[in-house]
Image 1 (cartoon, rainbow, N blue to C red):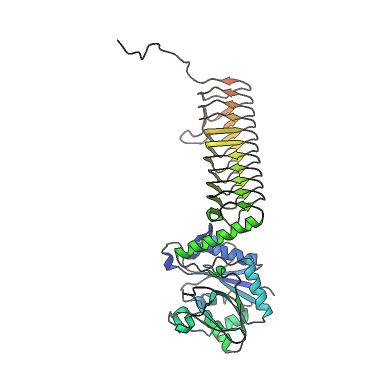
Image 2 (cartoon, rainbow, N blue to C red):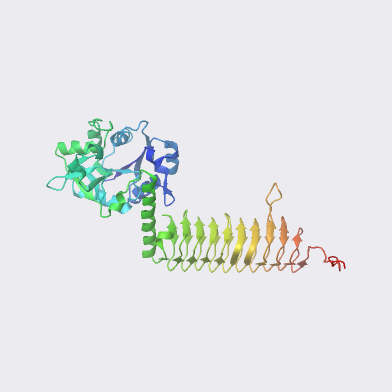
Length: 452
């Protein structure tokens, strides 16, 4: 039977002390609400309902392509789920209820919960965790059969109940018909004056329905994010999980605690990642690369056997057997070929550099097309901006640019052209020609000779 999912993302999160809605705070570079939605989708659930409220439009933009339900007033979790009643009219089967501020749930866990709910033939399944410090969480009280007898919220719990270590994670699986039947019966008769979703559990138990408890094998998945400290904890746990996944797939990460990899990135076998490396926004790294230390890759593509250290690559592509850095900056729109050398203090922006070309150090190449086997000497600048427009520099195959040269765009250096060091080139250079664009040296003998 087809499952559905409701993700609760309407809260403001006052303890975050932020103008940004809590579900949009990022863990490993991804908004928490998107992490939750991605895990639900990866569990095979396509029919997803996102309950939004505070900053709802921003939250919608972060998770496109699913159903949205507005909770205009935040009156509790039960009230939030009940907002889906009309849209889910006629929906049958299990309904997974998850929270946007518990971003560490794995897709495999959601699959296991759905399977557990079916195997137990339960009206509901409560996802629980046994933790060392249960403070702030609702406590799960089981009966002799091991099923859920009661969930007591922290504010309503008696002292003995507060000693219980098994907590309600806020994630549930319900029979859809029973869920909305019992939601109609709950009242805000509690310390907060809210409609608790857990009161549905109480009603089901009261009427003799089976409410099963699925205890998480990894309690860390249950971490809820309510403040910046917990946000940092979630970041650390997810980062470690991501690094471990890559290491198990054949990547060497020298120090996972100082390596930052976002969830949607790819790294090939036998690549080595050195500390203080940031791999972000869908970056793809090939096999047998050396990356780091002190590297940031954002939406970058590195082919096999790339060496890059102390450098930044933003939305650029690096070919195989190319070295980049140290202290290089590859800006958006740049494609570097294979067997190239991009050296220290080199900036390349919106340019193409063909195979076997070298820009060894201290150069700026912007809005340029550089052919193969080109050597660009130290201190070369493509002067691409005239104050109003950007212009292109074209350097064809096998050109040689002497040190400290300025190439004033638009300009073309045809195949095999040479530029003498210290030249400012303003006109096209024919094939296999030498351009000398500098004043002839004049020596004034004795000009600085001191008298007497």
